[in-house]
Every structure is written in structure tokens, then in C-alpha cells.
Amino acid sequence: MSDASSPEPRREAPTVRAEELHISFGDFEAVRGVSFDVRRGECLALVGESGSGKSVTARALLGLSGDGARVEARTLSLGGVDLPLASRDGDWRSIRGARIGLVHQDALVALDPLRPVWREVDDALRLHTDLGREARRSRVLELLGRAGLEDPTSIARRRSGQLSGGQRQRVLIAAALAGEPELLIADEPTSSVDQAVQAQLIELFAALKADGMTMLFITHDLGVVQRLADRVAVMSEGLIVETAPTARLFTAPEHRVTRQLLAAQPKAALDSLTATPAVDAPGPLLEVRGVSKTFRGAGGAPIQAVREASFTLSRGETLGIVGSSGSGKSTLARIALGLERPDAGTVSFLGGAWSPAPERLRRARRTKLGYVPQDALSSFDPRRTVGEILADALTAGRSTSVRTRRDAIDAALERVGLDGSIAGLRPLHLSGGQRQRLAIARALAPEPEVLLCDEPVSSLDVTVQAQVLALLARLVDELGLACLFISHDLAVVAQLADRVAVMSDGEIVETASVSELFSTPKHPASRALLDAHKSLEVR
Image 1: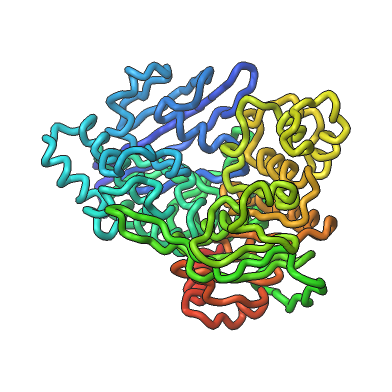
Image 2: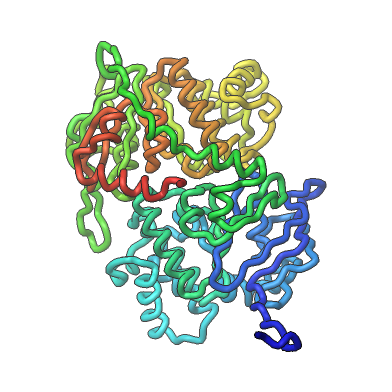
């Protein structure tokens, strides 16, 4: 029997505490009285729709809420010490990188393309440790190895453009760990990599958590949340509407928003696939025959990105291309677009030579091949308004005048579910879902016959992702388009594609109907992709 007079054991104070956090931009309150805490060795996941306030909440812990942000809180502390609410950089120099590490979503943008990656990690060591130059070099290799990179010495010499998406993400993690932070903020760190790499990164984050790392993990992928987070906080319109242990949230969600997020997960398509009728077309619109492409890697070593790849795409058909990171999907897409010249093989489009061929012979057909990129924001001219972007697309680059094409611009926006009132806005002022819809509107404006989509929904939250996928499926069907759809998410591909081509080490190793591929995959690479997908499904 315990002594009633003895004091209760003290519970360890949280590593991070936020109470009544408010973040405003002018008259708009983006975060409205949010409260949460994260304890040592715990992972708290922040989830919610695009624009719900997840990222701006997390970045307030680093003083990075954005220009013009007004941050107020009853408590905002790290390790029991109040964090500065003002955004003066001098107040944060001893915190950013040293006490709080940040892993960005887009590693390609976060890393300097002109410097070898060892310098990215070395910067953090130089700023936040007392190590000398030689000691830092050894520590860089140690950190790259800790982040799961094989052959750290070779990786350290390369530039970011010479790495796969998964390798770049691991470099960012190594840099974030260099200052031995108390808290690691990971903002959508797995959304732009394939599912096999996702599974590897989850294992890495889980190992860091087991070593005592405290994490604030922001993601729209509830499969990742289920495997990594201890607790989940669901955000909607600047509020945390539900917080619960992970297992309870998935089995007994209480709030309407939580139930909507769970329902929006693209998982049901794989459970009820049926054979798709063959497309009745007189001939392919796009035909790729035996194309190969080799690049030069570090030290001039050849890297064969694509090896004798072939496929056809007919009117009214959607072909999905899937594969692990570095398998050659994006290079093959650039060859199909005529943006990359193959070393061998040919591409035909609309019955004529497309690649290799001089641009003067392709120019008249350029508008017949629409393109929807993964990162819509970086594909837009930030100086142009929405209306000017669409005017440019409608006139094949001849004019950006909105006044003379206002009706056509409004119709293009209406087609993708956007209101004409946004025509005067610039892309930076749109949400992620609006930007992706604008990218689709731009691609469709000149009335193409083939639409090439390269990871068009990977950076969107699950609710917006479902809306954009439904939009694409409807437009492809209504307009009778041929669609080449590249994705690392097999559930997404299953919703849209008629056939799927699997890439591995630059080769197309298997092509089959969706139902056949998902029920009886023949190649080991196909089976590995399906296994990785199943391991990340929401249960």
C-alpha cells in the first residue's frame, strides 16, 4: 500500500508546448487558438485539408510563419523555455537548426543545385557546433550514413540533381539532424517519393523516434500517420478539431472532418477492380519505340536512365506509368514531351516524327500535347495573373491580354471548377488545389488530344486529391483524350488507368490491364510495388 502523504511522481514536461496559438495575416486569422504539446520521443502528426493551418502552425515554432504574420500565444515553449514570438532573425539563430530541425517537403528546391550535398550538411555543423573542418567532414559522412544513404562518400560529392528523390530527402534529414535538435519538424517529407521509398523513410523516422527524437510530423497521408505517429491532431479552418491516440482516431473518429479525411483515402479502388474493355481506336496517337537515354553521373560515370522503352497510347485511353524512385519515369515523360532527345529509338505523335525531330517540325503540334506537372506553382510565371496565364495558353503564347479573351478564360476556369473571380489573382495567392486545377485548365486550353500528367496529385491532401482525380477522370472521358499518367501511388493509378506500365532500372518490365496487374503481377518489380502499397494502406 502506498503512503498517501508521499508526493506523486512528477511527469516529464513536454518538449514542445503551444497554448492558445493565434496566427494572423492582416484581417485573416489562419490559426485560431490552437493548443498542443509533444513529449520527448513522441511523434505528433498534424493532419488536415490544404489550407487548414498545419504548416503555418508548425513553422511558428521556427519563426517562419511568413511575411506580415502576427503571432500571439499564451505559451509557445521548447524545453520549458519560451520561444520568441517576434520574427526577428536574430532571436531565432540559436534555435533554428540547433534546437529545432526542419525537413522540407520539396528536397529539390531546398537543396542548392550548384553545391555538392556535403556542403548542405556541413553548413549546419559549421553554424551549430564547435567541430573543426576535418571533424566536420567525418561527421557529414556519419550523418549521411545515419540517414540511410549507402556509400556516403560518393553521395557527399554529388549535387542534388544527380540524386534520386529518396536520396535527396535523406540528405535533408541528415542536415536537419546535424545540430542534434530537441525537436524535428517534418513537413510532408514523404509525399513526393514512391511508396517503396516512403516505407524506407518511415522506418528511418521510426528509428529516430526510438532513439528519443521528438517529432512534429505534417502529412496528408494517413497511411504514414498510422505507422509512425503516437497521437494525431486534426486541423480544419485554423482549429484543432480532434486530438487522439493514433489507434483510437482510426477506429473511432469523433469529428466530421476526421471521418471525411479517412473516407477520402484512395484505397477502395484496388479492392474492386474489373477488367476494362479494350479501347477501339484506329491507331495510336503517341507511339514510343525502343527509346534509351544515358546521362553522365559523378566523375563522368554513365547512368542509363531509360533502356529500350516502348509503349503506345490510343485515343480515349489512359496509360499509367509506375515505378520506384529513379526507375526512369520522369525521363521517359520528358522524352515523350519532346523535351529530352533520346540516344536511341523514336517517338511518333499524331502520325508524324516527334523525337528526334527539329522543333520547327513539332511546333504546329505542340498545342495538341498538354502537360500537367507535379509542382504547379513553379511551372507558372509568378508575375502573371491567372487570366494572363490562360490567355497565353489559349493563344499558344501569342498574347497575354485578358480583356480580349475574358469569355474564353471564364469558360476554361469553369471547366475545372474554378470561379472567374480568381482571374486577377497570381498563383502564389491560390491554394494547392486551386493551383493544380489551374494547371489542368492551362493544359486543356488549346484543346490537346493527349494529356501527360506527371505526379499531378502527389503534393495534395487526400480530400483535394480525390476532387482533382475525379475532375481529371471526368475531363478525359468527356473530351475523349488520351492520357499518360505518371504516379508513384498505385491506388491513384488504379482509379484512372486502363493499362499500367511498370518501370524498373530504366526498363518497362511489365505492361498489363489494371485488373490483371493488381491481381496477378508477373514481374518482381511489380510485386515489390504492390507489397509496398499494401504496407502503407490505411487499415
